[in-house]
Amino acid sequence: MGLAILLPLAAIAVLLATGLEGRSGPMDGGLVLSDLLVCSRMFRPLGYFGRAANLLLLIGDFSTAGARSALVTSLVAFGYILLIVWFGWIAWFPMSRPSTIAARWSG
Image (cartoon, rainbow, N blue to C red):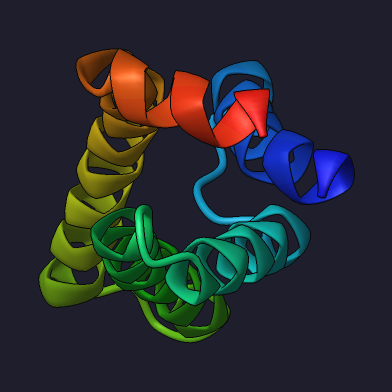
């Protein structure tokens, strides 16, 4: 699970370092993490949101191999915005329910 968490974060670093949008590997990791979140009743909304963000980026990654279009560019940009929102939501979501998480972890 740790690798699945690190791969989507690597996509942002690759984008900032190279200026190239879309990397299939990190997006696949994001999809794996989204699937893991969907399996949990508590984090299911996070999983569906993550699936949407990562699927948009993965489709955009495959689409950029051909001719560039404004639609593909817009979808990739929207996918990165969703990805950033998803990361923020993942960070905020557990903090918004401290008693539920503490109860689950305490056994």
